[in-house]
Image (cartoon, rainbow, N blue to C red):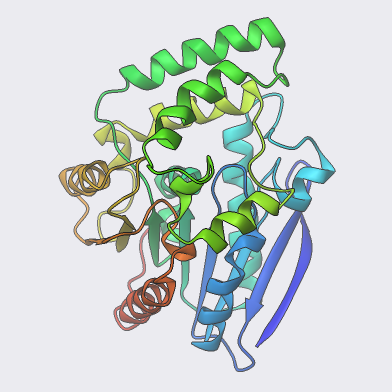
Length: 314
């Protein structure tokens, strides 16, 4: 197995840092991982190792404002304008790079939390460029009202502090209820995983747990409003295989809102939507005590899709 990293130049000349884990033999499939908010691609090393050993090449970029890519710009900040679309195009650039490096090899995407919404947004435009997608820890709110209210607060904070300001108010409104839902609480990040070692690693990582800028929050709320309507979900190719998974004890989606997303995707016409909730797990199944079981399920699902590859019209 090979483990390395490289830099990729985005369409606007931004330098994107990418982690990769590759098998020694030619890969039977490739996986592009889109990480969540306030973390980075390097946190998926254990998953990358497991998949590479199973013959799957893994690529995990540090998104704009995150990881080593973030050190090239501003941590916790996509861009001053059009940040969501820029990240989508970054994923498209990396998708093209992977397909050039691994021709005739099935390519899948995995998005976690914020990354799951970015992957959904990507699929609404570029379903034909992948053979399947895995969504980790997403939730679904059928009404966009909550996102609109949150965007109003973010807009007010942007006016008060500026685009690059970091609102303690906004951060508290979004995260404090989630953090307080885990009792007894050892740290404010216990909601991420029931594994104390995984939480401790997150706490000690200087590239994790930072506050994001007001503009990034505006980008996120705009993106969430974009992917919520069923008519927009219908832009994802109906035959594209999807696998939604998460922890039953995740205070973000609480299990039920992940199932709501699966139902909405089916209602929008998706014909292949698999779902799995892991008992006892929280927001990050790939960093849980039973992560080996999660890794095995991801590998099994990808291998199953490889045996039934379809080409989708652009």
